[in-house]
Amino acid sequence: MAEADGIAVRVERMIGDVTARIGHVRPLVEAAFRAAPRHMFIPPVALVAGEEMVAIDRTADPGAWLDAVYSESPIVTQLDDGRTPLRDVIDDGGAVRVPPGTDYTSSNSAPATVADLLNLLNPKPGHRVLEVGTGTGWTAALLSHIVGAGNVTSVEVDAAVAEQAAKTSARPVCSRIWSSVTVRTAAWSGRPSTGCTSPVVCGGCRTHGSGSAVRAG
Ligand SMILES: C[S@@+](CC[C@H](N)C(=O)[O-])C[C@H]1O[C@@H](n2cnc3c(N)ncnc32)[C@H](O)[C@@H]1O
Image (cartoon, rainbow, N blue to C red; front, side, top):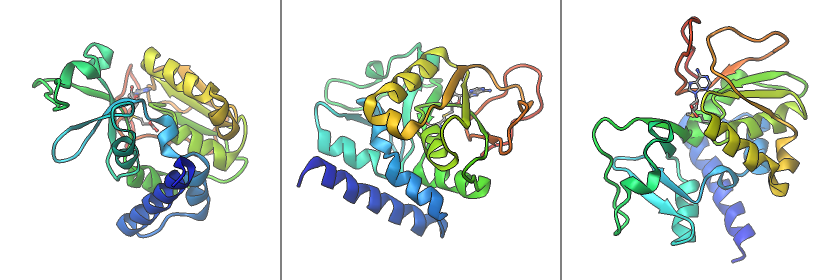
């Protein structure tokens, strides 16, 4: 099977799994899952969160990497605001040993969580959306596919994470679907920016500064 066919099959399976889990995925959200496939936003080495943490490495095992990317799990992409490189918690045999007290500071959210959030938000073409917490950029890309070019601003508190998301978006294969999302390094303080018709606040965000509590997505 060609890789593209394998990915298409996995995307459909993921949509089926998400629908079974949360009951319904809006047609515009389903179409976005096809247009912005999750694997484009996952780094080659990452940690899959489940009952136990599992490392995935695209170079070492591309099939296992793809299977994990199209599973229902959240995928951790940064520890301790980048102070602990992911490779430092993966031993030579591939086992993951995360020291107590380690913070999981950035991730690609579980597909069912993202679908739930987008179902609730119910974005429509032409809406202007603020996303808080760009992370890998996947949700921003999904939003962008739905609301259209130039209508998504995404803020990310961690400069390295924001830079990586911007790089991902600049890859030719992504820019087609990303449709000019604006990524800014900024910390959400709880105040909506002007001009947003549908602000979205992602799960996992922490308040920085003096704003009111962030609503979990
Ligand atoms: C669960 S991840 C986001 C997942 C992302 N939507 C995706 O598709 O990959 C949460 C992100 O929010 C960022 N974050 C946390 N609090 C924030 C804040 N107050 N302002 C901006 N970004 C924040 C974190 O650095 C992290 O990258």
